[in-house]
Length: 354
Ligand SMILES: C[S@@+](CC[C@H](N)C(=O)[O-])C[C@H]1O[C@@H](n2cnc3c(N)ncnc32)[C@H](O)[C@@H]1O
Image 1: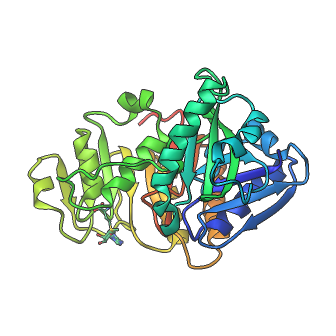
Image 2: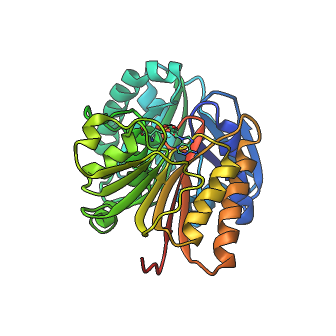
């Protein structure tokens, strides 16, 4: 199978395709990209007949910043018999490895969202039929994906359960906490879910930890930290929400985050400042290199053009500076569902003694 289908936020198809192609090529899998702007997906088509399968076996899905999901498939199946979609697609499914479950998904576009109901009902009818035929087995390591462009055009393929996004459409749906002072709060919550396995939460996102929030007002991210019973230093010239200050867990400093220097080390530094990515990455790197925090989550606002090269250049700078001083760290970045013109980065210093 030589098509690697990648879901992304509409408008980011170029970045998604460029990144997938670069990663595949670094691993000796060569091919070309196909995309349509604002479609919510891109394709990497390998010259090798099994290039897409090799990609999901050799690459780590978490390395991809812009892809919300990836699916190994063949070319688009068009003009199927709309009176018998199940009959028309069963033959294709039979060619795939047996999968544990089926998800039928639209693109994250206006037209796609209008197809959600169709996807749900077609998905449950097709799942039943496949189960009866023994083509779905709960223990299988892959998930069957049908990406519906319309009622008669489908990509049919699979993704490894342990090397792909677990959520339908690759989107983590979170409920907005009513007490939080801003919608931005969901960015930090989603980031934690993406970057930190639930089994590690008690170790890293836990009661009593000390955190600093750069560019904190009105306090959506601080609210998340307080909600985990952390003690937070909030840096911002703007006002913090009264309700947060009443918690007694927040110290608000009206200082410039670019010149502020902490007296003590923090477990966490988070930063949601809207500024040039090149400027923000220098600030973030200095915090890590100085050992002022063990772990950080921050945003890099994307420029209008050259978005992917800018992201790469920022992440390369960070890695080079850490290498120069011999600091080992895990670094991951993702274009989250709650991110718009920005990506979110997570860095944890390993062997840190704070
Ligand atoms: C996008 S908002 C942060 C929203 C916040 N994360 C939340 O969830 O409510 C960016 C904030 O960064 C602050 N900011 C911008 N430049 C700053 C600087 N140099 N030092 C401190 N704060 C700064 C702004 O005042 C603004 O409140």
